[in-house]
Length: 298
Length: 298
Image (tube, rainbow over all chains, first blue to last red; front, side, top):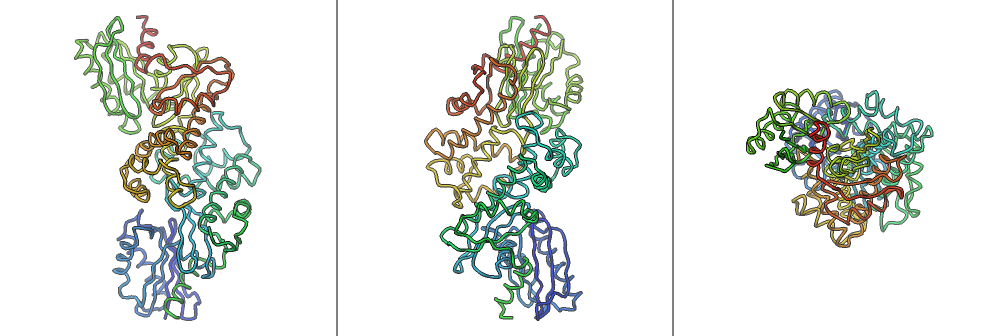
């Protein structure tokens, strides 16, 4: 049997087709198909088209292809609607497995073992599994949750730049210019207009997060304080998700962690002493593959 | 000469017509005409209609009526466009005076004297005047600024409720139910859907601010910490606006301060020692009247 693995995140959707031996035959990347952004019907259509694309390129008939999906927006209260839309779209597939994008990422990062994964991209969440029971902490979304995420850090960075501009915070050497460049404005006052004109403030503000990280790395103390707070919030998600499970492994994924030690250092430092930081073993697509192997006895 | 005084805020617009002796002959209240929400043309039309309403009710001909306005959205970079729209709308009035809503509030609260006014409604800003020079601190708007405002406090309160819900913060006795009631949802998880369905998240979140204040007053420690932070942010606006002017009076206005000592107590405590808290002497409409008296030698 072939397996189409899909990681449908809030920013991008990645597709791979794997042969019966697990080797990747074909891959493809598209835009987000988050149901809150494109609707359930478009989500199902985009996923179908992406799977067909990698399957046909690899010569895999749909009747011999299992589809294992990790889907953003597959959260409490939404499962039923998402599953129905996907069952309609993949009725001719050999099998269909649906989970959240965070769940397939957790399986991939921890190699299927019990433990916690912290995801910090535009949003943030911790997902865990212990003795077959799932745990979710955070992930409440913009603008009231997603502490420590890219959108959160970007918003805090813009706020700091504006407070520096009117003198409430002491100036720093790097953050202001880096944030203006990230938001494509020529001066801090113009940020307000850019936000008002934006159709997706969350995404726009997340663009300022790398500016905060690079400014921290370059020695801007105010930016460093923000990155430390973001890392502490992400560790707090993990600490809560792993509560009662001393020795549990904690892994990480998402754009914010791609900055490396600038974020990982304070993140590991803020984890509870009993927890074991563990670099991700595999990708979300590896997780989708592992779920298929397990469920279908491949 | 008659004077039409107008306080056009981000939530409501208030109109009064005063006779030559300053007594109020007629008053009226309408919805907001903030240009960012209704556009410049609608703003001018709504202000014209409101002024005509109080003027005609008092038998005041427009040619004998000076119009003194405090307008939300009259900030750096917007003055020219706002003034042009208002000059077109009030070309037949005896005189036209335009300022920001915060500026007329400052004149009213401080009786025209030098000093600082902190405005904390849905948004927040400090405006000051010293030796004829204006000062503005904050007021950068949602979602990156307006620290300590109703929208800011409401967002923090919702975030705390959600962190309590997933166990990141310890439970408190009052805030959760009060916030759910304010947002018209039956449980914390439903807040996310209510926000997604809202066309004005800023306004919706501001509705949770009174819940935070009342919960703090009732003994919810988490809510108290949020209210203290809001009050400290508001004091920080004032401290920066009054920097270099020891002994300056600092007054306050806006919905958040209407809670009384629950907010005023920590606000006064966080003001720089050299500053003098001073209860507002008059309303924004009094300020608009005083500006007219001064400019037109009434």
